[in-house]
Image (tube, rainbow, N blue to C red; front, top):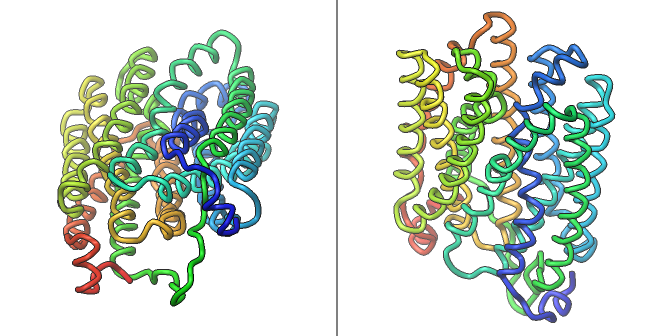
Length: 404
């Protein structure tokens, strides 16, 4: 976008938030992937560990898309880019609905859907951050809460549709939904006057912020929380069943956990507007560690639901504080770039413990070892989080502690 194009239309921040909401809610159905595990296993005879790779590949695709998004800012108008991403997601889910092999699932759900979703997420998030002026932590906490919120909506619908019509019909319906919400999101970006770059002005050139120790610490804290949280999100239904719960309880738990994570993400962003980021992140890891400890000491169906919720909520708080922390530590024009790089940690988390959990289940028939590993990661997360900078941007600029 040129400077004149970016500065021309009237800007409506609320409409940019509506656009992000419209597309990201159905994209959040990726967090309800555990609902598809059993029906796909039964029809295609694919083991749990291999299906865990499908979810992991989707997060790899998401990360690739998010990394590519900042390079696309000037290629076309935001509405065109948003529509292109929505079409990619639509095609990817359609391919998954027709898949008869693991390879086609990986291509459709993992690569095409993942890349389109990641790029669309960053494009819309960048647009919001350049239009919204205040409460950046709360706004960004809300934006990343849309994914688990989407899972809250989709998990019970998917389960019902799977039981009555089969998982292929469920995926086909999701494909149509992504197309419709993508069209609406593209229209709202036009109405919002969304821009993706800062207009060029006369004066000294401002280079990109350099990544430093702050970025490394923030990404590591995010990785450790996400490894445990994504394991819960991707396999919550089957984890509850493994600890003795019935199918109805497992689905209800999956939905409740996703809802709790959505609220925790908003709250995490809200808290970093008011409290030092290291305290928020360390407290979140402490909550998750307590959940892992409870499930290890008392492995029963009722404690499984509570403990998984605590692990998930801890991950939600860390996600929200990470999104808000980026807005604190770096300028708005850098948000999309830094956020996309941070999602490398999210990707690494998704292809680590969730896939290992599937393999351990195939070997042992349970998740006890997985819970122990998650707890150890949360303990490390507490220590690393306490080393994050506490100051606001002005102070950090003076002390050189912002990672620049």
